Amino acid sequence: MSTYVYGIADAGHPSLPEGMEGIGSPALITRTVSGGGLLALVSDAPESLRPKRRDLLAHQNVLAEAGGGGTVLPMRFGSVAADDSAVAAALDERSEHYHERLTALRDRVEYNIKAQHDEEAVLHAVMAENTELRALVSRNQGAGGGSHEDKLRLGEAVAAAVQHREGLDAAAARATLEPHAEAISAAPDSTGWITNLSFLVDRTSSEHLLEAVEDFRQANPHMVLRVNGPLPPYSFVDSTPATAGTG
View 1 (spheres, rainbow, N blue to C red):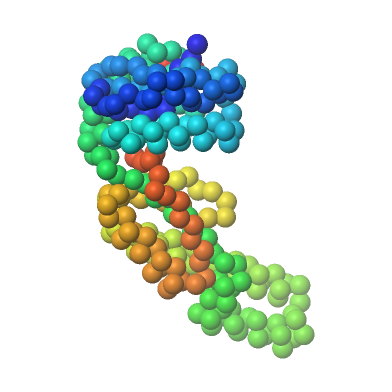
View 2: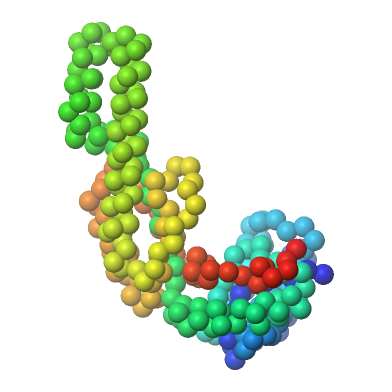
């Protein structure tokens, strides 16, 4: 049976509670696999693995329980290896990397911060700062609304101005928040967000990042920011045992 991997810890990491349940229905019992001076927190993998709420929460719960005993490299949901032997081989092969990551991520947490525009507010902002747009609006109003071509030209100009503002605001958000993080990981582009960044911070000083977020929000009322964290540092692990012969 395939092996599901929750996370990786040093070999001396305290064991999970006996009989602790992981993903699956009925829930599968967690165990550890050793290799390279490391422990992988694993369970059997269900035959059909889907990101159901129950399994997502179970994955997070195993990591939360393990994290209470020390640093754990969190694997993303869905990390599956061919079997326990494949996991052990990956730990041996990548032991130097994983030990380095465990040291680097000790007492570190991740905050994911997404930003998008408030559509009405950003339209007011680009109109206020763009004299050409205001001139186009005035001409159309003076012509009773303007022709179809005039309206199309105005719409294209507004869209271009908003797109330009998206780039400026994304860069400003990163420049403002970056000094308060040890590392940044950019998520793949997704519809609706002008920026989607994960920040690695020391858990004892994360309030500096959160204060910077609030200051940026107050200074940019045309933007909507969503903060998710503290999280295990998923975005800063770099690779998983699933790279070595997975199913």
